[in-house]
Amino acid sequence: MKTFGGSVLYLDRSDINTDEIIPAKYLTEITKEDLKPYILEDLKLPGFDPKGAKTREARVIVSRANFGCGSSREHAPWVFEVNDITAVVAESFARIFRQNMFNCGMAAIELPKEKIDLLFSYAGYPDTTMAVDVAGQTVTVRGGGKEETISFAISPFDKALVLAGGWVDYADTKY
Amino acid sequence: MGKTIAEKIFASHLVDEPFAGTHVLRLDAVLCHEITTPIAIADLMARGKDRVFDATRIKAVIDHVTPSKDTKTATQAKILRDWARRHAIRDFFDVGHNGVCHALFPEKGFIRPGYTVIMGDSHTCTHGAFGAFAAGVGTTDLEVGILKGVCAFREPKTIRFNLHGTLSKGVYAKDVILFLIGQIGVNGATDRVMEFRGPVVEAMTMESRMTLCNMAIEAGGTSGICMPDQVTVEYLWPFIQNDYPSKDAALAEFKRWWSDDDAVYEKVLDFDVSTLEPIVTHGYKPDQVKTITEMAGTPVDQVYLGSCTNGRLEDLRIAAGILKGKTIAPTVRGILSPATPKIYQDALHEGLIDIFMAAGFCVTNPTCGACLGMSNGVLAEGEVCASTTNRNFMGRMGKGGMVHLMSPATSAATAIEGKMADPRKYL
Image (tube, rainbow over the protein chains, first blue to last red):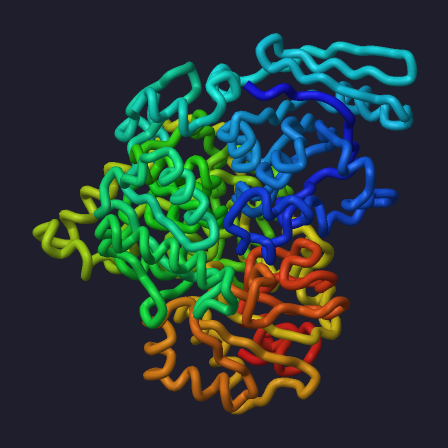
């Protein structure tokens, strides 16, 4: 099982789609590693630079509703994975993106809006980090001398996928 | 308590329920294209499991960039081609026989009522038009589908859309689905099956039902779904005539899948679409919609007619009906991509291609290319495209380009005027 945690990249908008996460023109790459430079290339947000230090250092993404909508491309979780981002915490996810994350043994964690707002309140501190504990079902955010731990719900199947390291290994032993 | 059509399909395909609310289903069709399948193939090979669960249930096509435009896309095509040959996948469609997956596979009769269908493509929901449960998935789900013939889904909670009334002249399935997405929003049906019912759906051809179901994903829906009826039987008859003694017998069989009268829905939404006008998107999300009356006069640089949403013969006929004897505005580039070789040939025989070419359209081979900015009609920064496709995301058809989604009729009228135009004045 991967560890989920570290610096946080805040993407403050709903409906961030997989074309913004990895544009279609890069879907002709046939290894995951080749996707690495193109992370979030087409996402336009005030103050956001896809090539900036915050993106490079990020290990967790925090965003709003319907994250990962649009295309089914698993290149979206992969481009996160090869950039060492292994968890996304958001108000809600598009189904295919969410399943792709868990299928890869990564985490797509849903929290209610007020908890997401709380996570966003840490965005201004230079030292903010987050830890996602899938087994214990908690998210811990630290920054500015403060700390909060928030519990989350996860389907037992999705949890099992993370613990098994993904769907291929899970299905291969079971079916 | 009755069941919905999706619940019936789930119950009849259940392999395992590892946890409450998780259904592992047996798959009837696993569909593949050259963008999302090669990495699944590579992973299976790396695991020493380069096998397929059933070569007759796997269908594959090269459609996103075809013929290949460069070394990378040629390599993707080659990986899929070699794999299909290696595993004797008979239903593999290469250059000369290939077309947009969600138009080609139904046209071949591969999708039947009651089927479970997955593909590594979000618009797989299209196939729900046949009364199938059809869901887009990622590469890992596809990989497990190829290897094991199963896929896991949550409870198929269903929203029922009752569409009442009759569509006015110049208003089509595309306008209906854009309107519905505008009503419920881009995540209005996330994790839900969208069941389309009512006299408006019953009156639709299979082509129109495919257009309707195609964009379920743009509201977050897992699958669109229609009840398989006489229209479905007629469409599928060439492929099923040896399986049933009569069309009536096929219909009776299909009706077993229909949602029960006492089925439980999460939500039932009623819309009278009789007064609906042609719809066009603005902004960068498919739920940002306005009527053509509000959008008329907006200049465009390119008009694109094609895709899994609206590249079928019916769409070409409608657009050609408007374009006949006219030429498109000199400021506009018109591009038509018939969605399959059969559609292309039928359009040739009917004289539709002549109409498009005389009007000034460029006619390309069947491909997904332009819809996602990969080939055959990519936009430059700042350009605007009136398009019959399904996504208006920022940069979707080319970095910095703007896309307005609309019906084939509205796109044809727009091509003539060089700015968004109401198709009803041309009908």
